[in-house]
Length: 487
Image (cartoon, rainbow, N blue to C red; front, side, top):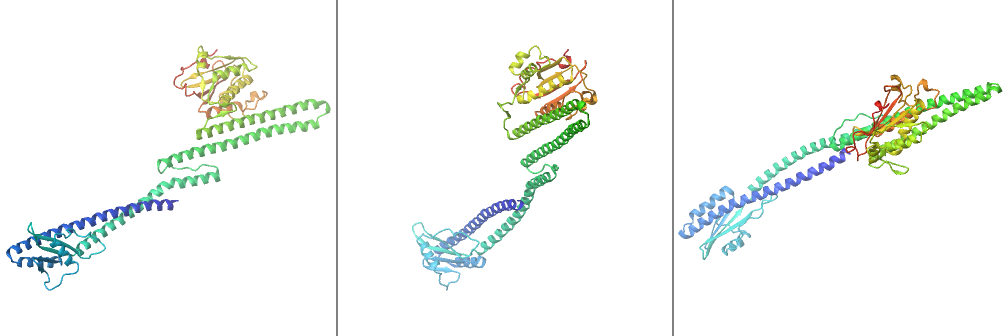
């Protein structure tokens, strides 16, 4: 690719240099011809004036001396026709075939007064004629056989120097083109190598931003893509390892129950079967949680792809880019078996109805977040469960608080880990995936999950999400009560 681009750019520069040389060469040639024309026309006028003076006085000595002098200086022949008498450098020589017709034309005042165009490729003699006499009658003519060899030689030296300058300029341009080609294509080669490295090792290579702005932007996009791909692969590996561990534990416990069932007397079979059923239910819950997590990961991957291509995120019912968290919270609270106290603030109905609690998240995922928070409070906390939603600080938040035992500082640091469960909650049915899924969904939408143990006990879970674009700047500052101050 470097060779092809170099040849293309080198061909362009060569074409430009050759075109410029041709233009300058033409200008130099015309200038040399013009100077020769002016100089010889001046000399021709001088000889015509001498011939007129000789015609009046009858003395041709001055004209002959001037003709001889011109011959010595320029090696050019001058022919003066003075009332039929020919004065020339070599009086005994006969005029050439081109000179005689020109003399006759000059005597009729029809001779051309301009030289033929000068050319660096030939130096053939050129003829120039001028009549002289009175206003009523032409009495003679002067014909000059112009030798352009000196002018052509000078022109050739000038064109040679111009050609040398053009070659030097083209060499400099080729060096610049080579450097430019390498500068442009170096990021492309490095990107190609990085992609090959990523394919083989599944790890991104460090790329330095270089080259034109477009390739710098491409390098940044590759880096983000490689980091996202690596994070996704790491996430999948971790998920596979953690899932295998959890399934292996459940299957191992089930196999132990089966072995004990074979060894136990018939009177204990019913109890052993119940134990086996509980282990199988735990395995079923683990697999169910894995399916839900896989579905969530699939939707998040689809969301990232849609953002990258500029598409819209949709769910089964059509476009679902925004969700009213207050409305979703009301519907989820009514569906719970345990009563949920809503603390939406005194202006919640008006504000929420106007869209102030609308977050930039698909409704399906908003329902999943709120459902997991309420289920977590219902299973591990104690009543009453209090929940709220509202606009705050340019975004939207939804929160759920219970009155249970809460979590210690060490447990708060571990609770977001997949399949993690406190030793105090081993007897409670669950799979340890709820809060990790909530955090994954929130962060994928540029939000966050905050967990704390407020004064008065229990666990407070707050999910912050970006507000819908229509209400990001125009909604009220807050339409929900503060969860820390809720009794």
